[in-house]
Image (cartoon, rainbow, N blue to C red; front, side, top):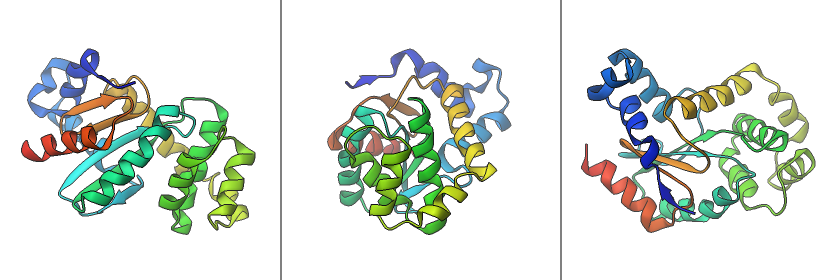
Length: 205
């Protein structure tokens, strides 16, 4: 179900807009740091055009049904908009299987297969848990032994924890949540609605 994040709009705007920083007792430097972490944090997976003129941010979980439903719509938007940069925050909020999947997805970056693995996990049937995630990893050609070693790296855990913290800091209430410019929408979005969100962000530049 799609619904605007009306209840958290003020928190989001205050977190992302320097002009509203004082409303949340945040300094301009703190606001800038939050914006940087949301839109361009170190090590975040990027799909689409890495130098695109517009950025769409997605907070998602591989065991979230509406994330999976949105995945082909996001893929279609990326295909139709060559100037779009998609930044993905892995926020595993549906249990240990979700956390295992998020760790594996981020670890796949070291093998250059994040995009393929991400799409496969979003398109899989059944729950994302250790056995199913490793099966999908093999199917997309990942070195599974290396993947499991890389998953234990402290920076993987730190990246997930930072994304979870950011979701709390800007008031997101669940997955999927999409952020572009100074707006966010929670829940399933079709390609046209996603395109509208991106177009609004472009127009506001």
